[in-house]
Image 1 (tube, one colour):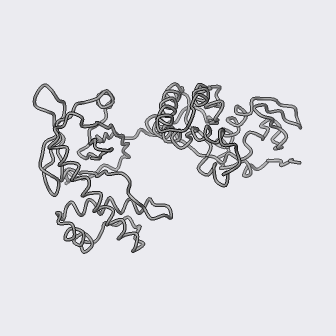
Image 2 (cartoon, helix red, strand yellow):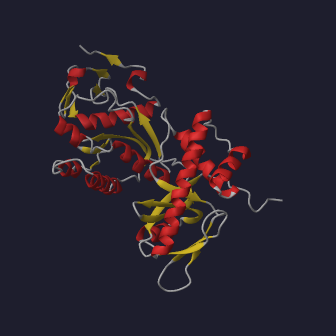
Image 3 (tube, one colour):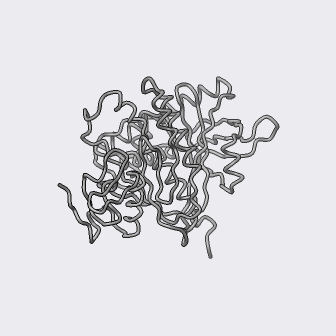
Length: 365
């Protein structure tokens, strides 16, 4: 007999849609703010505890630890378990530094919350906090264009939500789930070179996002709204990309591109270069590729704009600014287009970097 609660083995995609509770009455807002402050304090306590123990395992917290937090903060065992689980995930994702929680957010599972349709005309959803440590109240919520689009596209609303605050504004992150499609068995291996000045250059001929550079030049200083504007432009640009004939997308692994680069560039250029949000670009590409069944591969960007794909020789003299001209065979191209083709070459060869190609000729002077 198959149990009703048996979990599916199929991979699941998850997305979130945020709604600020601007229409919530002041009394309920104060209750939620106090609850979020309590959860933040308890979670930080568990984070400090696990960090001190050097416990970054994926195992659930033991009952003794859970009860210790429960008795200290006078909360329920179930809430203490949920916050300890969240703290474990934070410690596990930490990279060498002790985590210090800046945001006031808490994930509420079906033990704490029910997501229902609102009975009436003025709202769309009713979020019912049903206790187990959470305050008992009902939160009416308006739907948004993003939520409606998820529902139209066949995404299923999860029973779990994320409650949080920004300043004195409370928000709810709705979580949507959908089965991940299988990887495509058709299409081409395509490389993409992301460039601060020239946008996103693909080996199949697509060039998008060039307007981002001109927008960055108009910023007088680096502020929160300038990064928000650039993120919006990146999202719009990548939506214009034609993924219909791509099976594998190879991009540069730029995780440590700024390592040991402090003081290399002038202050003004460094400020503008900080708006080249390669990490955010990767997040957007991961989301697109996951939904479309495209395999995304990260490759070593070293020498990709200086390597000649015609004669298979690398020479640092091959590139001058945006121009590529091989000093050995005379092949010419735009440097970013050449880099995109070389990233695709790495994908076809199934290797991480150019040094791993079997017939690479290093001819640098």
